[in-house]
Image 1: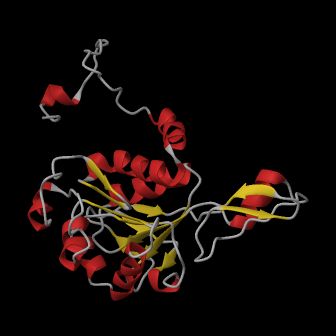
Image 2: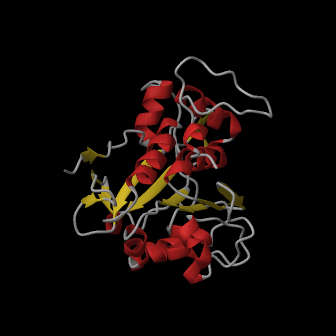
Length: 259
């Protein structure tokens, strides 16, 4: 039995952002920098407003649903304007485990727009479907050629989408263990999240929250990443010290799942 999930349509448009944050009569104008990317802009009496970051999460039939939803969700928690875009002929896609997700838009309809981040979920055959989308490949080629524009991929996508096109050459990266063989180098393959300049890669569903928080940190800074992470009840860092167990507690190590 499949589960239906509808992607929330973002309301953080620049105009709405200005009205909510500063009031309808505030002398503030939020503009995009040349090229359409978010940033600090000055208008009116010199009041400064921060335009929201624009993020694209492409989706295909067979995309990994946990990775897709977690990345979009965490970025939205940070205040990013996230567009989940279908590369298929329908907005609704059936993901790798049968979960059905409805995209915000067709990729073809946002192909001429600029994004601060393009983040690719993994999953099979979703990663292959993304790699077959020539519109997406053109967008990625442009994105990778812009200094400061972030490209991110996880699970199968680093090996299936990015590596075959030379986009990971001389770039530290990681991928799902089954796709490490497709990377040009496995020097960083055991890392859960790898950041090399404007390229960020990660391993799979179990690393999706860390991956998404790394994207938040890259776009908004470490304080925003901490703010977003705080209420998410993430595992506490051990710092070499054993955390005292409470009655009836279950941990990953009890089943050997963290080895």
